[in-house]
Length: 483
Image (cartoon, rainbow, N blue to C red):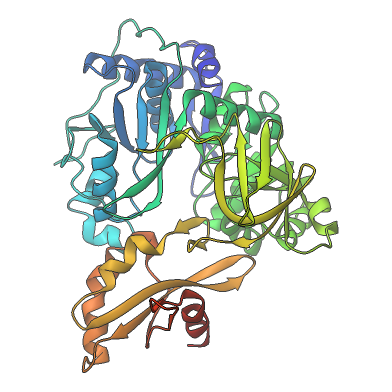
């Protein structure tokens, strides 16, 4: 799929490729297919000139847009492995991930470098924090440079290097683990392409009509099918105007984005897809009432994207226990393990976790059942908390809460309605510690937790359970819900 897209780009094709929205919601052409062709070829040539070869790893921290898309396509063209750097994870977590990925080069835009430097105090208010990106590998700037940023990687002219022809690692996406032992999903070129084909077959983009969505798995299949892609506006009211002006044939938004758009009075056209978090029947029905021809919930994991899908009418009609996430997509297989956990496999499944051997089945962390090709979930069996469209792993952040004056601390999720959760830290002060002093001591570690920062901090004795007297997370969650 990616190879097809790259091969189909031409320097003389001036059809719109990547669209954006101005403040009034008007459509702005951010890049034509010719622009994307030149950027992809230019970045491939520039990366090749720096001595990067197939199998090398590059870290990427670039905001969504034409340049980030071109860099990813250029890396794929050369057979490089991309390690995705998330500026919301927190600097200590990112440093541990960089060490594991061992990138030869870090590609970052000026905004990402500002988050790691002079703009860090401002960025922390938006839950963004990055370490010094040059700490473990040389860094270069993608796009416009600002004072104090790394040297720029300028798209080079000249013959584009030959495309890498073979399989191998394509992308590394960090998901969980600890700072001492991060865990990362490794997708190969084969599994990434299979996932892209699955999305294309689900969305069925028509050439020439825009598709709205900001993820790589939406951009590539749409562009490969000849459809321009529009990056969603961040502000709900601007997004409402953008939807009205574009009238997209298909739209992909996360459940939080959909809820915000509906609250702002959005009207939809075509087919709407939503995932990355639980998608309720009520939310899909509301989208249909707002004008969508179809509204789909997509069940996907970082390890298997996408896995299953269900349309609003089918989900609304389901009366059984659990959460119907739909029919398995072609090529995806499922079974239930002895512990009741749903296991998935297929061509679009990740090859392995970084540093671990390949595994034919992916453990989803979800309790589920499979009836023919239909999947119904019955809850999560992990400690993972899901807020908005973000997975939050308490083990990554709890150690930082054990500051002087704190005896024990856990982070739990509390149901917040419509499948969402609030994140609450239950902190047990040490004997004699003043509550005001404990809260003051927690300010710095809380500020460095990025998007995992709790919605609330409850000072209370952490419940314990079992012979080993480990923290009882279920009891702590009940305590947090009452506080």
